[in-house]
Length: 448
Ligand code: ADP
Image (tube, rainbow, N blue to C red; front, side):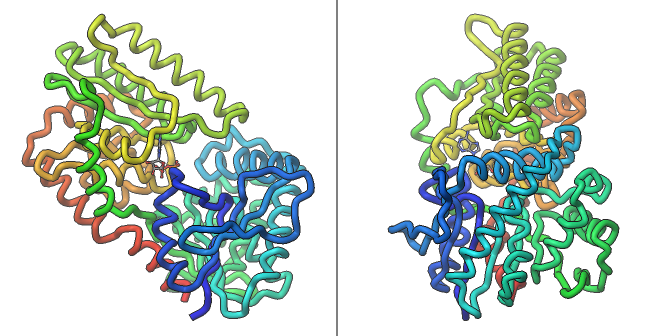
Protein backbone atom coordinates (compact mmCIF):
# COMPACT_ATOMS: atom_id res chain seq x y z
CA UNK A 1 0.00 0.00 0.00
CA UNK A 2 1.42 3.37 -1.01
CA UNK A 3 1.64 6.45 1.16
CA UNK A 4 -1.26 8.80 1.66
CA UNK A 5 -0.59 12.44 0.79
CA UNK A 6 -3.19 14.87 2.16
CA UNK A 7 -3.31 18.47 1.05
CA UNK A 8 -5.34 21.28 2.56
CA UNK A 9 -5.06 25.04 2.49
CA UNK A 10 -3.90 25.24 6.10
CA UNK A 11 -1.60 22.74 7.67
CA UNK A 12 -2.94 21.65 11.06
CA UNK A 13 -0.33 23.13 13.38
CA UNK A 14 -1.98 22.56 16.71
CA UNK A 15 -5.37 22.19 18.30
CA UNK A 16 -7.50 24.13 15.80
CA UNK A 17 -11.27 24.38 15.43
CA UNK A 18 -11.02 21.97 12.52
CA UNK A 19 -9.47 19.44 14.91
CA UNK A 20 -11.93 16.80 13.74
CA UNK A 21 -10.27 16.47 10.38
CA UNK A 22 -6.89 15.97 12.02
CA UNK A 23 -8.26 13.15 14.15
CA UNK A 24 -9.88 11.55 11.11
CA UNK A 25 -6.73 11.53 9.08
CA UNK A 26 -4.07 11.05 11.75
CA UNK A 27 -4.72 7.29 11.90
CA UNK A 28 -4.70 6.84 8.15
CA UNK A 29 -1.57 8.97 7.81
CA UNK A 30 0.31 7.24 10.62
CA UNK A 31 -0.68 3.79 9.30
CA UNK A 32 0.41 4.45 5.73
CA UNK A 33 3.46 6.59 6.45
CA UNK A 34 1.60 9.55 5.11
CA UNK A 35 2.28 13.24 4.74
CA UNK A 36 0.07 16.27 5.27
CA UNK A 37 0.86 19.34 3.18
CA UNK A 38 -0.58 22.79 3.77
CA UNK A 39 0.25 26.44 4.19
CA UNK A 40 2.11 27.51 7.32
CA UNK A 41 0.00 30.62 7.85
CA UNK A 42 3.20 32.68 7.51
CA UNK A 43 3.77 35.16 4.72
CA UNK A 44 7.14 35.48 3.00
CA UNK A 45 8.20 37.91 0.30
CA UNK A 46 9.77 35.24 -1.90
CA UNK A 47 7.72 32.05 -1.76
CA UNK A 48 9.94 28.97 -1.68
CA UNK A 49 10.12 26.22 -4.24
CA UNK A 50 10.43 23.45 -1.64
CA UNK A 51 8.32 22.48 1.36
CA UNK A 52 9.56 23.00 4.90
CA UNK A 53 9.33 20.02 7.22
CA UNK A 54 7.51 20.75 10.49
CA UNK A 55 8.92 18.64 13.30
CA UNK A 56 6.92 16.76 15.91
CA UNK A 57 3.37 15.44 15.70
CA UNK A 58 2.00 11.98 14.92
CA UNK A 59 2.59 12.21 11.15
CA UNK A 60 4.88 14.01 8.69
CA UNK A 61 3.95 17.59 7.89
CA UNK A 62 5.24 19.75 5.07
CA UNK A 63 4.50 23.46 4.96
CA UNK A 64 4.65 26.23 2.39
CA UNK A 65 4.42 30.00 2.83
CA UNK A 66 2.35 32.38 0.71
CA UNK A 67 3.55 35.77 -0.48
CA UNK A 68 1.37 38.75 0.48
CA UNK A 69 0.22 38.97 -3.17
CA UNK A 70 -0.68 35.27 -3.22
CA UNK A 71 -2.55 35.64 0.06
CA UNK A 72 -4.55 38.51 -1.48
CA UNK A 73 -5.39 36.83 -4.79
CA UNK A 74 -5.45 33.09 -4.08
CA UNK A 75 -6.82 33.15 -0.52
CA UNK A 76 -8.82 36.32 0.18
CA UNK A 77 -9.61 36.75 -3.50
CA UNK A 78 -10.58 33.71 -5.54
CA UNK A 79 -11.07 31.32 -2.59
CA UNK A 80 -12.95 33.51 -0.13
CA UNK A 81 -14.54 36.20 -2.31
CA UNK A 82 -15.47 34.05 -5.30
CA UNK A 83 -15.69 30.32 -4.57
CA UNK A 84 -16.97 30.57 -0.98
CA UNK A 85 -19.98 32.82 -1.77
CA UNK A 86 -20.67 30.97 -5.05
CA UNK A 87 -20.66 27.55 -3.40
CA UNK A 88 -23.05 28.85 -0.71
CA UNK A 89 -25.52 30.29 -3.20
CA UNK A 90 -24.55 33.93 -2.61
CA UNK A 91 -23.88 35.03 -6.17
CA UNK A 92 -24.76 38.59 -5.06
CA UNK A 93 -21.49 38.68 -3.09
CA UNK A 94 -19.22 37.52 -5.93
CA UNK A 95 -16.17 39.70 -6.47
CA UNK A 96 -14.94 38.52 -9.88
CA UNK A 97 -11.51 39.81 -10.89
CA UNK A 98 -9.02 38.45 -13.37
CA UNK A 99 -6.09 38.85 -10.99
CA UNK A 100 -7.80 36.64 -8.38
CA UNK A 101 -8.09 33.73 -10.81
CA UNK A 102 -4.53 34.25 -12.04
CA UNK A 103 -3.16 34.19 -8.49
CA UNK A 104 -5.26 31.12 -7.60
CA UNK A 105 -3.95 29.18 -10.58
CA UNK A 106 -0.35 30.26 -9.94
CA UNK A 107 -0.40 29.06 -6.33
CA UNK A 108 -1.88 25.71 -7.36
CA UNK A 109 0.72 25.32 -10.14
CA UNK A 110 3.51 26.14 -7.71
CA UNK A 111 2.19 23.56 -5.24
CA UNK A 112 1.91 20.92 -7.95
CA UNK A 113 5.56 21.46 -8.88
CA UNK A 114 6.68 21.29 -5.26
CA UNK A 115 4.59 18.18 -4.67
CA UNK A 116 6.06 16.44 -7.71
CA UNK A 117 9.49 16.66 -6.05
CA UNK A 118 8.37 14.52 -3.11
CA UNK A 119 5.84 12.29 -4.88
CA UNK A 120 6.37 8.54 -5.27
CA UNK A 121 4.62 6.53 -8.00
CA UNK A 122 2.28 4.56 -5.73
CA UNK A 123 1.30 7.46 -3.44
CA UNK A 124 -2.43 8.18 -3.15
CA UNK A 125 -3.29 11.88 -3.10
CA UNK A 126 -6.24 13.31 -1.16
CA UNK A 127 -6.91 16.99 -1.83
CA UNK A 128 -9.16 18.91 0.55
CA UNK A 129 -11.46 21.76 -0.27
CA UNK A 130 -12.07 24.57 -2.69
CA UNK A 131 -8.69 26.28 -2.34
CA UNK A 132 -7.00 23.49 -4.27
CA UNK A 133 -9.44 22.46 -7.01
CA UNK A 134 -6.93 22.62 -9.92
CA UNK A 135 -4.24 20.54 -8.22
CA UNK A 136 -4.96 17.23 -9.98
CA UNK A 137 -5.07 18.97 -13.35
CA UNK A 138 -1.75 20.68 -12.64
CA UNK A 139 -0.14 17.43 -11.49
CA UNK A 140 -1.39 15.57 -14.59
CA UNK A 141 0.14 18.29 -16.82
CA UNK A 142 3.44 17.55 -15.09
CA UNK A 143 3.00 13.84 -15.80
CA UNK A 144 1.77 12.46 -12.43
CA UNK A 145 -0.33 9.32 -12.83
CA UNK A 146 -1.14 8.70 -9.15
CA UNK A 147 -4.69 8.06 -7.99
CA UNK A 148 -6.13 11.36 -6.79
CA UNK A 149 -9.24 12.12 -4.79
CA UNK A 150 -10.84 15.44 -3.95
CA UNK A 151 -13.18 16.20 -1.07
CA UNK A 152 -15.24 19.39 -1.00
CA UNK A 153 -16.11 20.50 2.54
CA UNK A 154 -18.63 23.09 1.31
CA UNK A 155 -21.85 22.59 -0.67
CA UNK A 156 -21.62 22.21 -4.46
CA UNK A 157 -23.52 24.94 -6.34
CA UNK A 158 -26.39 24.36 -8.75
CA UNK A 159 -25.55 24.52 -12.47
CA UNK A 160 -27.49 27.78 -12.61
CA UNK A 161 -25.34 29.38 -9.88
CA UNK A 162 -22.19 28.03 -11.54
CA UNK A 163 -23.14 29.95 -14.68
CA UNK A 164 -22.28 33.10 -12.72
CA UNK A 165 -18.63 32.02 -12.67
CA UNK A 166 -16.87 33.15 -15.87
CA UNK A 167 -14.61 30.09 -15.73
CA UNK A 168 -17.32 27.60 -14.71
CA UNK A 169 -16.45 25.18 -17.57
CA UNK A 170 -12.80 25.27 -16.50
CA UNK A 171 -13.76 24.45 -12.91
CA UNK A 172 -15.53 21.31 -14.21
CA UNK A 173 -12.39 20.37 -16.14
CA UNK A 174 -10.32 20.66 -12.96
CA UNK A 175 -12.58 18.13 -11.25
CA UNK A 176 -12.33 15.74 -14.20
CA UNK A 177 -8.67 15.06 -13.38
CA UNK A 178 -9.49 13.26 -10.12
CA UNK A 179 -10.54 9.63 -9.94
CA UNK A 180 -12.92 10.44 -7.09
CA UNK A 181 -14.82 13.58 -6.13
CA UNK A 182 -16.33 13.37 -2.64
CA UNK A 183 -19.10 15.70 -1.47
CA UNK A 184 -20.93 16.20 1.81
CA UNK A 185 -24.52 15.41 0.85
CA UNK A 186 -26.65 13.79 -1.83
CA UNK A 187 -27.92 17.21 -2.91
CA UNK A 188 -24.31 18.18 -3.68
CA UNK A 189 -23.75 14.99 -5.67
CA UNK A 190 -26.80 15.83 -7.79
CA UNK A 191 -25.64 19.43 -8.31
CA UNK A 192 -22.12 18.32 -9.22
CA UNK A 193 -23.32 15.66 -11.68
CA UNK A 194 -25.67 18.15 -13.33
CA UNK A 195 -22.98 20.84 -13.51
CA UNK A 196 -20.42 18.45 -14.98
CA UNK A 197 -22.91 17.49 -17.70
CA UNK A 198 -24.54 20.87 -18.39
CA UNK A 199 -21.52 23.15 -17.95
CA UNK A 200 -18.52 20.85 -18.31
CA UNK A 201 -19.91 18.86 -21.26
CA UNK A 202 -19.44 15.51 -19.48
CA UNK A 203 -21.51 12.37 -20.05
CA UNK A 204 -23.28 10.85 -17.07
CA UNK A 205 -22.64 7.11 -16.73
CA UNK A 206 -24.28 4.53 -14.48
CA UNK A 207 -23.18 4.00 -10.86
CA UNK A 208 -22.31 7.57 -9.94
CA UNK A 209 -19.68 8.07 -12.65
CA UNK A 210 -19.26 10.75 -15.27
CA UNK A 211 -17.00 10.69 -18.30
CA UNK A 212 -15.08 13.78 -19.30
CA UNK A 213 -12.11 12.94 -21.53
CA UNK A 214 -9.72 11.44 -20.75
CA UNK A 215 -11.12 10.13 -17.48
CA UNK A 216 -14.04 8.53 -15.69
CA UNK A 217 -14.70 10.25 -12.39
CA UNK A 218 -16.74 8.84 -9.54
CA UNK A 219 -18.85 11.43 -7.71
CA UNK A 220 -20.25 10.36 -4.35
CA UNK A 221 -21.35 11.63 -0.94
CA UNK A 222 -19.18 11.08 2.14
CA UNK A 223 -20.84 13.11 4.91
CA UNK A 224 -18.11 14.41 7.18
CA UNK A 225 -18.42 13.35 10.80
CA UNK A 226 -17.05 13.67 14.32
CA UNK A 227 -15.63 11.28 16.90
CA UNK A 228 -18.98 11.10 18.68
CA UNK A 229 -17.88 8.74 21.46
CA UNK A 230 -14.91 10.92 22.33
CA UNK A 231 -17.01 14.09 22.25
CA UNK A 232 -19.66 12.53 24.50
CA UNK A 233 -17.00 11.71 27.11
CA UNK A 234 -15.52 15.20 26.88
CA UNK A 235 -18.94 16.79 27.42
CA UNK A 236 -19.70 14.52 30.39
CA UNK A 237 -16.47 15.60 32.06
CA UNK A 238 -16.68 19.27 31.17
CA UNK A 239 -20.26 20.03 32.11
CA UNK A 240 -19.22 19.95 35.76
CA UNK A 241 -16.50 22.54 35.11
CA UNK A 242 -18.77 25.32 33.86
CA UNK A 243 -18.69 28.61 35.73
CA UNK A 244 -21.12 28.93 38.62
CA UNK A 245 -24.37 30.73 37.84
CA UNK A 246 -24.32 29.96 34.13
CA UNK A 247 -27.12 27.46 34.41
CA UNK A 248 -29.99 28.76 36.51
CA UNK A 249 -32.65 26.39 37.86
CA UNK A 250 -35.59 28.35 36.45
CA UNK A 251 -33.98 29.35 33.17
CA UNK A 252 -33.60 27.41 29.92
CA UNK A 253 -30.56 27.84 27.77
CA UNK A 254 -30.45 28.04 23.99
CA UNK A 255 -27.07 27.96 22.27
CA UNK A 256 -25.69 28.96 18.89
CA UNK A 257 -22.05 28.34 17.91
CA UNK A 258 -20.86 29.51 14.51
CA UNK A 259 -17.98 31.38 12.96
CA UNK A 260 -19.32 34.84 12.21
CA UNK A 261 -19.98 34.05 8.56
CA UNK A 262 -22.88 35.28 6.41
CA UNK A 263 -23.74 31.69 5.53
CA UNK A 264 -24.60 30.81 9.14
CA UNK A 265 -27.89 32.71 9.36
CA UNK A 266 -27.15 34.41 12.68
CA UNK A 267 -29.19 37.58 11.91
CA UNK A 268 -32.16 35.44 10.85
CA UNK A 269 -31.77 33.43 14.07
CA UNK A 270 -31.72 36.58 16.21
CA UNK A 271 -34.83 37.90 14.47
CA UNK A 272 -36.62 34.59 15.03
CA UNK A 273 -35.65 34.67 18.71
CA UNK A 274 -37.01 38.23 18.88
CA UNK A 275 -40.22 36.96 17.29
CA UNK A 276 -40.42 34.18 19.88
CA UNK A 277 -39.99 36.66 22.75
CA UNK A 278 -42.56 38.93 21.21
CA UNK A 279 -45.10 36.09 21.09
CA UNK A 280 -44.30 34.48 24.45
CA UNK A 281 -44.14 36.91 27.32
CA UNK A 282 -44.47 33.97 29.72
CA UNK A 283 -40.94 32.93 28.70
CA UNK A 284 -39.36 36.30 29.48
CA UNK A 285 -36.65 35.83 32.14
CA UNK A 286 -36.98 32.04 31.73
CA UNK A 287 -34.95 31.54 28.56
CA UNK A 288 -31.73 33.01 27.22
CA UNK A 289 -29.62 32.54 24.13
CA UNK A 290 -25.84 32.29 24.21
CA UNK A 291 -24.44 32.91 20.74
CA UNK A 292 -20.72 32.19 20.42
CA UNK A 293 -19.32 33.62 17.19
CA UNK A 294 -15.62 34.26 16.72
CA UNK A 295 -14.99 36.66 13.83
CA UNK A 296 -13.30 35.20 10.74
CA UNK A 297 -11.89 36.62 7.51
CA UNK A 298 -11.78 40.13 8.94
CA UNK A 299 -11.13 42.84 6.39
CA UNK A 300 -13.40 41.24 3.76
CA UNK A 301 -16.36 43.65 3.43
CA UNK A 302 -19.11 41.03 3.67
CA UNK A 303 -17.65 39.88 7.00
CA UNK A 304 -17.45 43.39 8.42
CA UNK A 305 -21.10 43.84 7.39
CA UNK A 306 -22.29 40.66 9.13
CA UNK A 307 -20.51 41.70 12.32
CA UNK A 308 -22.25 45.07 12.35
CA UNK A 309 -25.63 43.55 11.57
CA UNK A 310 -25.45 40.92 14.31
CA UNK A 311 -24.16 43.40 16.92
CA UNK A 312 -26.98 45.74 16.01
CA UNK A 313 -29.67 43.04 16.20
CA UNK A 314 -28.51 41.56 19.51
CA UNK A 315 -28.36 45.07 20.97
CA UNK A 316 -31.82 45.82 19.66
CA UNK A 317 -33.37 42.63 21.07
CA UNK A 318 -31.68 43.10 24.45
CA UNK A 319 -32.78 46.74 24.41
CA UNK A 320 -36.38 45.74 23.79
CA UNK A 321 -36.72 42.85 26.24
CA UNK A 322 -33.97 42.92 28.93
CA UNK A 323 -34.61 43.85 32.54
CA UNK A 324 -32.22 44.25 35.46
CA UNK A 325 -32.03 40.50 36.12
CA UNK A 326 -32.05 39.16 32.57
CA UNK A 327 -30.62 39.83 29.13
CA UNK A 328 -32.10 37.54 26.47
CA UNK A 329 -29.00 37.32 24.25
CA UNK A 330 -25.41 36.91 25.29
CA UNK A 331 -23.37 37.49 22.14
CA UNK A 332 -19.76 36.39 22.47
CA UNK A 333 -17.34 37.35 19.69
CA UNK A 334 -14.37 35.17 20.51
CA UNK A 335 -13.30 31.55 20.16
CA UNK A 336 -14.02 29.27 23.11
CA UNK A 337 -11.84 26.25 23.91
CA UNK A 338 -13.24 23.00 22.58
CA UNK A 339 -13.72 21.49 26.04
CA UNK A 340 -15.68 24.53 27.25
CA UNK A 341 -17.88 24.28 24.16
CA UNK A 342 -18.52 20.61 24.92
CA UNK A 343 -19.66 21.47 28.45
CA UNK A 344 -21.85 24.30 27.19
CA UNK A 345 -23.55 22.09 24.62
CA UNK A 346 -24.40 19.60 27.33
CA UNK A 347 -25.73 22.29 29.64
CA UNK A 348 -27.89 23.76 26.89
CA UNK A 349 -31.52 22.75 26.39
CA UNK A 350 -31.76 23.75 22.76
CA UNK A 351 -29.23 24.27 19.95
CA UNK A 352 -30.05 26.68 17.15
CA UNK A 353 -28.13 25.45 14.11
CA UNK A 354 -29.78 27.47 11.38
CA UNK A 355 -27.35 28.20 8.52
CA UNK A 356 -28.72 29.58 5.25
CA UNK A 357 -26.40 27.10 3.51
CA UNK A 358 -23.78 24.78 4.97
CA UNK A 359 -21.73 21.88 3.64
CA UNK A 360 -22.35 19.71 6.71
CA UNK A 361 -22.29 21.67 10.00
CA UNK A 362 -20.35 19.88 12.68
CA UNK A 363 -21.81 21.96 15.50
CA UNK A 364 -25.11 20.10 14.99
CA UNK A 365 -23.32 16.77 15.40
CA UNK A 366 -21.27 17.95 18.38
CA UNK A 367 -24.39 19.17 20.17
CA UNK A 368 -26.15 15.82 19.75
CA UNK A 369 -23.07 13.88 20.86
CA UNK A 370 -22.71 16.06 23.97
CA UNK A 371 -26.23 15.45 25.32
CA UNK A 372 -27.16 13.44 28.39
CA UNK A 373 -29.18 10.55 26.87
CA UNK A 374 -31.47 10.50 29.92
CA UNK A 375 -32.37 14.17 29.64
CA UNK A 376 -31.28 15.32 26.19
CA UNK A 377 -31.62 18.76 24.66
CA UNK A 378 -33.36 19.46 21.35
CA UNK A 379 -31.64 20.28 18.06
CA UNK A 380 -33.28 22.88 15.82
CA UNK A 381 -31.63 22.36 12.45
CA UNK A 382 -31.79 24.20 9.14
CA UNK A 383 -32.98 22.21 6.14
CA UNK A 384 -30.02 23.79 4.28
CA UNK A 385 -27.30 22.21 6.44
CA UNK A 386 -25.87 19.05 4.86
CA UNK A 387 -26.38 17.46 8.29
CA UNK A 388 -30.15 17.58 7.81
CA UNK A 389 -29.96 14.65 5.36
CA UNK A 390 -28.64 12.52 8.23
CA UNK A 391 -30.14 14.08 11.37
CA UNK A 392 -33.75 13.50 10.42
CA UNK A 393 -34.82 13.42 14.09
CA UNK A 394 -33.95 17.08 14.59
CA UNK A 395 -36.64 19.77 14.43
CA UNK A 396 -36.05 20.87 10.85
CA UNK A 397 -36.64 24.53 10.00
CA UNK A 398 -36.41 26.95 7.13
CA UNK A 399 -33.99 29.62 8.43
CA UNK A 400 -35.63 32.28 6.25
CA UNK A 401 -38.96 31.89 8.05
CA UNK A 402 -38.86 33.64 11.46
CA UNK A 403 -42.38 32.55 12.37
CA UNK A 404 -41.69 28.89 11.73
CA UNK A 405 -38.45 29.14 13.72
CA UNK A 406 -40.20 30.84 16.63
CA UNK A 407 -42.76 28.01 16.61
CA UNK A 408 -39.95 25.43 16.60
CA UNK A 409 -38.42 27.16 19.66
CA UNK A 410 -41.72 26.80 21.50
CA UNK A 411 -42.07 23.18 20.37
CA UNK A 412 -38.57 22.44 21.63
CA UNK A 413 -39.18 24.08 25.01
CA UNK A 414 -42.41 22.12 25.46
CA UNK A 415 -41.19 18.80 24.10
CA UNK A 416 -41.92 15.87 26.44
CA UNK A 417 -38.97 13.91 27.82
CA UNK A 418 -39.99 10.72 25.99
CA UNK A 419 -39.92 12.48 22.63
CA UNK A 420 -36.60 14.16 23.39
CA UNK A 421 -35.11 10.79 24.29
CA UNK A 422 -36.46 9.11 21.17
CA UNK A 423 -35.19 11.79 18.83
CA UNK A 424 -31.80 11.94 20.52
CA UNK A 425 -31.34 8.16 20.52
CA UNK A 426 -31.99 8.00 16.77
CA UNK A 427 -29.43 10.69 16.02
CA UNK A 428 -26.82 9.41 18.46
CA UNK A 429 -26.98 5.92 17.00
CA UNK A 430 -26.22 7.36 13.57
CA UNK A 431 -23.36 9.52 14.88
CA UNK A 432 -21.70 6.61 16.67
CA UNK A 433 -21.94 4.38 13.59
CA UNK A 434 -21.04 6.98 10.98
CA UNK A 435 -18.21 8.64 12.86
CA UNK A 436 -15.10 10.35 11.63
CA UNK A 437 -13.24 7.06 11.18
CA UNK A 438 -16.11 5.70 9.07
CA UNK A 439 -15.86 8.85 6.97
CA UNK A 440 -12.14 8.74 6.21
CA UNK A 441 -12.19 4.98 5.67
CA UNK A 442 -15.13 5.31 3.28
CA UNK A 443 -13.38 7.90 1.17
CA UNK A 444 -10.04 6.09 1.10
CA UNK A 445 -11.65 2.76 0.23
CA UNK A 446 -13.50 4.40 -2.65
CA UNK A 447 -10.27 6.02 -3.81
CA UNK A 448 -8.71 2.56 -3.93
P1 ADP B 1 -17.41 25.69 9.60
O1 ADP B 1 -16.44 24.63 9.19
O2 ADP B 1 -18.10 26.36 8.45
O3 ADP B 1 -16.85 26.70 10.55
P2 ADP B 1 -18.71 23.56 11.15
O4 ADP B 1 -19.92 23.67 12.03
O5 ADP B 1 -18.74 22.42 10.22
O6 ADP B 1 -18.59 24.96 10.41
O7 ADP B 1 -17.41 23.41 12.04
C1 ADP B 1 -17.08 24.37 12.98
C2 ADP B 1 -16.11 23.80 13.99
O8 ADP B 1 -15.51 24.90 14.70
C3 ADP B 1 -16.80 22.94 15.04
O9 ADP B 1 -15.97 21.86 15.36
C4 ADP B 1 -16.97 23.89 16.22
O10 ADP B 1 -16.93 23.25 17.48
C5 ADP B 1 -15.81 24.83 16.07
N1 ADP B 1 -16.20 26.17 16.54
C6 ADP B 1 -17.19 26.92 16.06
N2 ADP B 1 -17.30 28.08 16.76
C7 ADP B 1 -16.36 28.06 17.69
C8 ADP B 1 -15.96 28.94 18.74
N3 ADP B 1 -16.58 30.07 19.00
N4 ADP B 1 -14.93 28.57 19.49
C9 ADP B 1 -14.31 27.42 19.26
N5 ADP B 1 -14.64 26.55 18.33
C10 ADP B 1 -15.65 26.84 17.55
